[in-house]
Image (cartoon, rainbow, N blue to C red; front, side, top):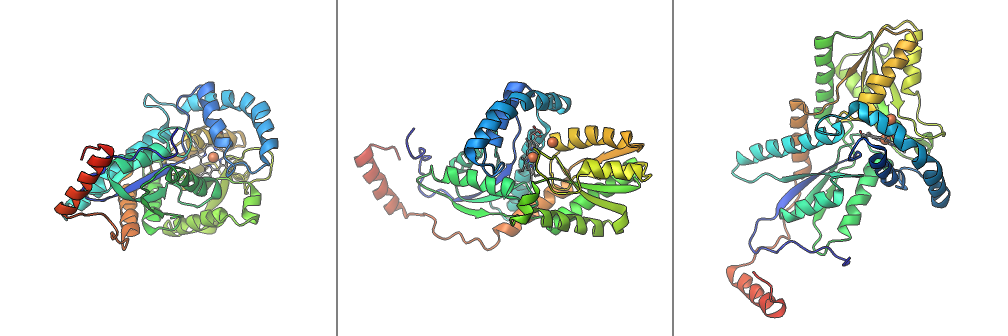
Length: 372
Ligand SMILES: C=CC1=C(C)c2cc3[nH]c(cc4nc(cc5[nH]c(cc1n2)c(C)c5CCC(=O)O)C(CCC(=O)O)=C4C)c(C)c3C=C
Ligand SMILES: [Fe+2]
Ligand SMILES: [Fe+2]
């Protein structure tokens, strides 16, 4: 493979565009053991995700994890799989499409073309590399990297950056980058979350207690300076304030523990058990850290979490759907993008006079026989 990827044909005088690169975690290509194994191999080989020394982890991963987990996880994926495939991919694709449409509509008011939007998955397909290629092919000289993780974590956000940098290293004509780090307190995001909860309350009734369940992380990441835990607490606090909740009316908890080390606490399963044992009969569970429903919300919360709550004496667990394609959320996302693009100067972009363009075309034709 050549060191650098082939550049798209260079067109003189074309307008340099801005591209929005949405990155989410990714999902297997199918709900089968082999597809899940391929996905988990890529995911769990990421040193940002599992920090055990490489050689030791390679042995554990290949001898134990990848021999047992794929079948178990595939069975869970099968429970949430739809005719369109994985919900995470379906919703993420829809979000990218809706965002592109809305940004295009807003730009059209000023007679300008909207930015290009592409979706890249950190693991699996479509890859971050292919999404960046797509933006470059669309003439994007500037790329806004927007991880679909409101709360920063090294294992998600920084890992998404790693994938972007790896592809940058393959380009000769690199685009300019703007990396979004976190948006856990962006007012439009908080307002969209609050509206989602209120909508569920009015449609399905209001539970006695609200559990805000975030994906967990190993506990040592907090001790070692990862701000994820604090970002989750702030999102929860702002959301609770928007919903005018007293502290006794909601619980912040962490789900999806992986491996044997201690993770951020309280664990969602423990919180649900304690609530039920304490006499709470109806609980709402909302996952503000996931902007799209996925295995972790549809299976782990709506199915497993429900069983845990009922087994401990609860009567009803209502899983409140993630933001998915909610119009208020897509509008908030478009506002956030606009904010990020403000004051990003468009200097340094090529625009030759016709004479210069003709000279360059001539030179390239002589030297490389290139078509212009
Ligand atoms: C929202 C943020 C996420 C963080 C932080 C995160 C950290 C993290 N995850 C694992 C291990 C697994 N996670 C899995 C699925 C999964 N994780 C997230 C998001 C975050 N992960 C999502 C959106 C999903 C769902 C993907 C889908 O296809 O629907 C899985 C795979 C499923 C399984 O086998 O259980 C694993 C494994 C670790 C170790 C980690 C931080 C160190
Ligand atoms: Fe995860
Ligand atoms: Fe999980």
